Image 1 (cartoon, helix red, strand yellow):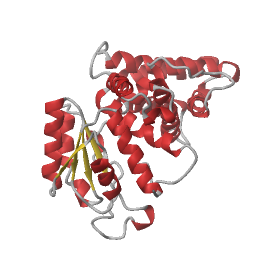
Image 2: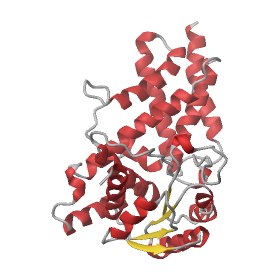
Image 3: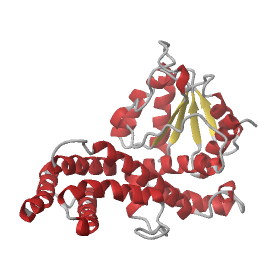
Image 4: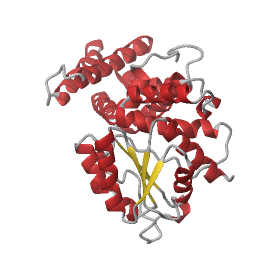
Length: 325
């Protein structure tokens, strides 16, 4: 079995472990390894649709009827674009849906062909989570990485409780599920997703921090980016900050992505803090942002005042610098 087939079999098996039962497949050469893996899997029913638009709305209907996400699968380019209307429908009707689109390898993109379009964030804000795993490669621990992608996809569609329930039911049905060859349990998968999330958050903060400008500008941009990240990735944010975890913060064995996220935030806060209290102020700024995320999610804050609250928070920190002068 080559690496593409191994990736497809592992990925599809994890989808089934998470409770996915239906796949609406619009055939194409680029998506063939995933389609074949789905067809072979005993717990996934494949429904073939030649027309992507018809298949995608059929998948939305399955999600509405069962309350579980159906999978849509197609090849690259315009085939993926045909799914867009159904993705928007699922988003606004809060219907769980998992969309898998094939893509050309990087060296074959942007060559003027309709199958080689830019598919990065193709569906915009209509999706809860977007991820490009890249070309499958045979590296140590690859199955572990591949298996946590479907888990996060289901969590973003339905929340971590759905993942937990399905994982328990899988454990009861199968005494030695393939999953546990790579993770000891559900908590390990959630922690792996959390570590990935901290790495993503570090990238988001780094990208938001301007190379020039005032401290107020930097903190404002970072604060907005943080809240956007939490809003766009609710399941991974829960894994990072809400679920019980064995991950240790500010310790010798803290995973590097956690340290990196804190360091990126500290660099911005450091513009308004003395060196001796920069760590404490960074923790305070982080805690304030997390509080805004949590209270906003729970509907405990007035809607429509996000920007005002953020600006007041930033002003409190930047005024500290003026006072110190």
